[in-house]
Image (tube, rainbow, N blue to C red; front, side, top):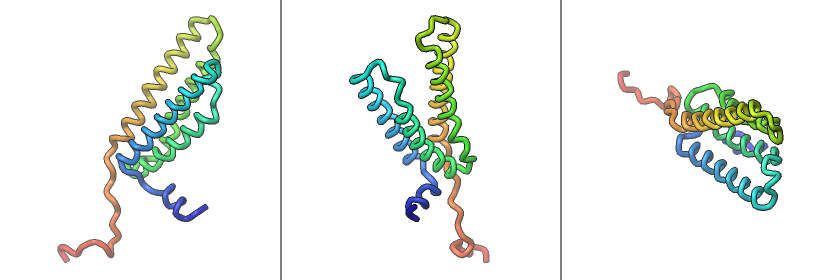
Length: 143
């Protein structure tokens, strides 16, 4: 892989860049949902490859943002996992007439949506840690 791409993947992301990435992923998700709904309304939940790709793009932005804030990067995996589990539960209840399962899946979808929204808001509001300056680049103030 190209050195510039690897440097970008290992880099840090400021708040504005994270918000732009998140808005782009949200826009792509909404556009994909609208297109699928327009052409195949019965197959709205049958596009996992697209959803996985959008989650991977968001996770890339989240990892860069977490690295900038000094938090562990594995936290970027929590919102996609929560959303996937809630969607799986919802798909299991689809077409069944079990009210308890339908209610549970609706609650799981709502909780997952709130968790994802809170995670995105938290990541977007985290303060950046100061950049580390090499000792040779520091000014000799008291020396």
